[in-house]
Image 1 (cartoon, rainbow, N blue to C red):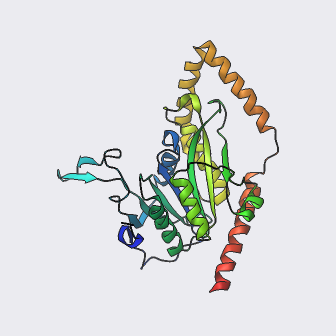
Image 2 (image 1 turned 90 degrees about the vertical axis):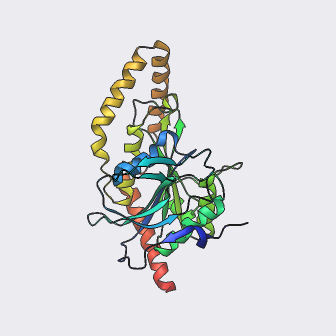
Image 3 (image 1 turned 30 degrees about the horizontal axis):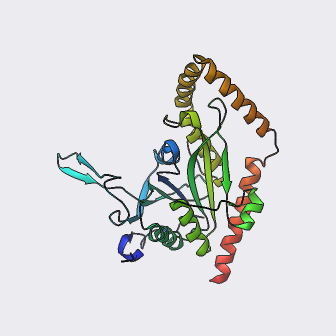
Length: 296
């Protein structure tokens, strides 16, 4: 039987104070988050922040628990607890930033993608989001010695034009990310998909450098602090470790040199500055807010 959103989505925002220019950030551990880069980036961003859960999605209808197993843990009182896959929507207020954020840092569901996506739509509507940004990471021919590139796409014609984003051209089998973005389109909620590159020859390593690149991009464009600069020491250790491994292998060293040359050539193309992107996004969001007020 089809699942109704009301059966799986709990909301707790009736007494919530108004949010300031809210944007929703989404990262889901799974196929489109290689190395857990996007979800770990949001973990880092929220590390020192007070977050309030305002909604959650019941995991039971969405997961094959033989694939995504719940964990048994002992809590502080010595009691056994079962931890299920969590998809909680959290509010983070940024008095020092340009806006407040709604964050879903969760787990990609196995089934019922349409209903899961509709849950996201309902939360975005209920909290007055004028933009949803989904984050991911993909294996790319990116050398570990360079700053990973963050690329974006959107189906919104105005956003694509303002921010210099690509329009999705892919046709073929898709995942929950594709279904989610389609549901947002149908609901007339603008969305952007941001993906950071991960060196394909280091797919099973941790990637603080890619996480920092993604966070720096978000900070500049959205006008919120992400604490990406505090990853410097971890990035330095990561860099030294992989530099040493490559230097000890002549074939690997030659391959990385080739990737560096390709990367440097690609970076010679003119790209919009972070300040330009931030200004264009602000103007777009102001237009969205004005449209909402005129409809009211």
